[in-house]
Structures are given as structure tokens and as C-alpha cells.
Image (cartoon, rainbow, N blue to C red; front, side):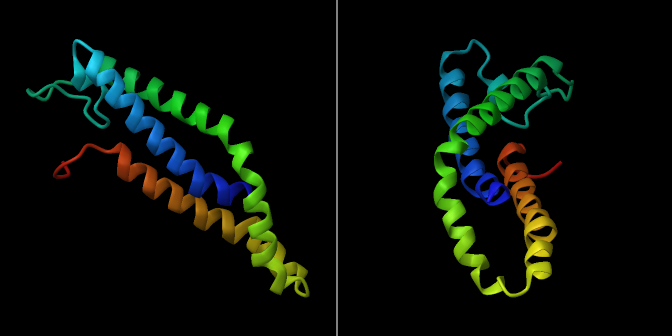
Amino acid sequence: AGAMVEATMGVLVEFVLLTLFSRMFENGAANPRIFRTGEYRTRGGLLVPGAFVVQLLLWLACVTAMLCVLPLVTPPYVAACRLLLRPLEWFPRLELLLVALVGPCVLYAFQAWVTDDFLKKEGDPG
């Protein structure tokens, strides 16, 4: 259930917090561009290390807050996982394979894909 709750509800919480914090800090900052995810360069193409560090710290705050919220929403996911795995009760090895290997790999790949999608710079790639 841990992988499922982290890859679904966890990603949603991270997205909401990142959006909320970014907008809040953009509105109160002297340099609002520093809080726009994926923007680490000036208009001239020079790297701004401070922008990367600020965005990294903001992202770490979002992940930390998500990990604090996750235990509150985990019990319904445990019940859902039990229901989903009920047909596999008679196949313990297959159940173990799905729970320990296939499920986490698929869910964490989904999490990485979705997270990358909202962390990257908006607009054309490159």
C-alpha cells in the first residue's frame, strides 16, 4: 500500500504544495523567476545556481510535508489493496511477485513520470 499511496495521493499532495508555495513566494519575492520550476538560466542563457538551490529546497519542503500527510491517508489504501489482491490469495508467489516487484516498479515509474512533468520548465523542450 505504501507504493500505491505515495505514487498517487503523494504526487497529488506534492503538486498542490509546490503550486501553492511557488505562487506564494513568487508574489512576495523581489525576483519571482527564481521560484518558477525548471528555470535555472537567465534570458541570456547563463546558469543561476541560486535558482536551482532555492527550487531544490522548495521541492524538499514539499516532499517532507507530503511524507507528514501520507500516514493520514494510508488506511483507505490498505483496504483497497486488500480488495485488489483478494483474487490472488490462492497464489501466494504471484501475489508476492506483484506486491514486491511489479507493483512498486510500475507505480514508482508512474510517479517519476508525473513528477518530472510538473517540475520541468513549461513551454517547448530545449
